[in-house]
Length: 331
View (cartoon, rainbow, N blue to C red):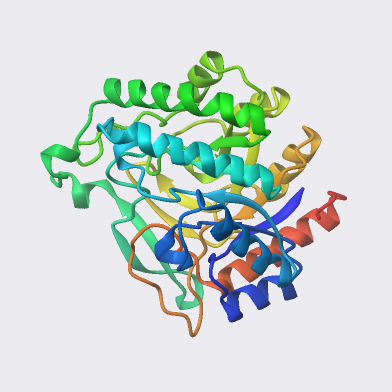
C-alpha cells in the first residue's frame, strides 16, 4: 500500500514538512484555482508547477481529488457542460503527461460533503465534526439547484460516456467517491451514490478497467453496508483504486467523526483484509479531529474541517504501527 495524505496544492510549510517528517511519500491534492493560486489543472503548466513543487518537497503527486473546477453544469446538466467536459478531457491528458495516475471525483450535485456542526468535543478536548439530519431536515437549496435522482443518473451517464474513453486512452484511473452523507433527497437534491448497489450498477454499465471507486470506509459504514463483504468483492474485481480511512460513531442520520483508534471499526482487521485481497494502491488518512493549538476551520468543503495536521500525524503513526506489526508493506 502507498501511504498518502491530502495536502494543499500551494506550499504549506507546516503541513508539507510534518507530512514528510512522519514518512508520507505520496501526495493527493485538490488543485482548484482558489486553493492553488494557479489556473485549473486543465492548464498543463499550472498542473506541472504543482507537481514539481511537490516533487521538490519530496513527494510523489499520485492523484487529484474533488472538483478541480466548477462541475455544477456537468452535474446539473446545464447548457455549458460540453465545454467543461472538454476541459475535463484536457485535465486527464495533462495528468497522463505528468504521470499523475489517479483522479478521485464525486457526483454530489449542488451540495458536497456536509456536516452540521464543527465544534463537537472529542477525546481530551479535541474538536471534531458532526452530521445530524434533524438539524437540517427543513433546509432546501434554491429551486434551480435541485435535481431528481433519475436526472442525476442521466447526467452521470452522459459524463462517463464522454470521460471513460479518454481515461482509457490515457491510462488514468477514475475513482468515484460515494455521497457523504449517503442520504437522498438531501436539501431537495437527489443523491445516487448512496449504496454498494449503486456502484455495481455503474460497474455493470461501464466494465472498463479504468472505472473504479474511492472506498471511503466510513461512508459505506454509515450506509449500513458490510464494509468487509462489499470491499472484498470490489478488490477481487480490481475496482477499488483508492482507500480512505476514517472512523465515525453513529449512522447516516446522525454521526460524528472520531480518532482513527477510537471508533467502532476494527482497523487492524480491515487493514489485514485489504492486504489479504491484494490491495497495493494509495491509502489516505481521512478526516481527523483538531488537536491542541489547532483551530477548526469553518466548513466549506475541500481541505477544511477535519484537515488540520496533528490528528493526521497521529493517524499516520497508528497506521504504520498496524502495518508493521501485521507485516503489511507500506510505501
